[in-house]
Length: 189
Image (cartoon, rainbow, N blue to C red; front, side, top):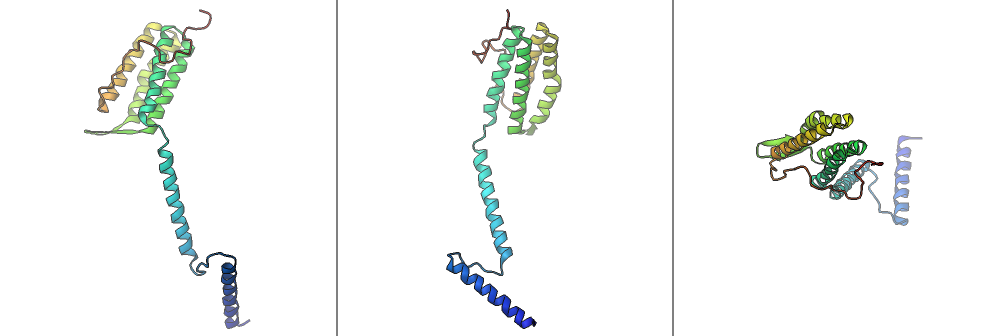
């Protein structure tokens, strides 16, 4: 087959394709612009994904919501320790740690007048020191060491609040548990 005849067959095939597309109600798209169409499709897909990300971000809790959960667990931790319910105290300490990590994932840095503060680094330091000391007191079932470690941890929490320019968020030893549904006294007592 000659080159001229091959080109003619290809051209006729393209024309038939275009006529069939129009007959079947499809928009006749330019046949020689697949890259432009792919780029337009990709751009539309990226725009749709960006819109979906923004929609999902709007559904996520903010850091203050997560810190309310931290306060719930840390408050109940105090009363579990006071009741010497060490398994429950360990549970509430683990929940506190987990929710603190969540709070840092929600907002890893805090902008202040002195610059950005790395909250993940602060939490890492607190976890390796104050929260580990609290864990050790729970593991040792030592009520006096627990009370000291708990109040020292509150001081550390407040230091983070101060560094974040939020000195009005001043935690203290709670006077009532946050949760009233969980029995804080160990079973059998």
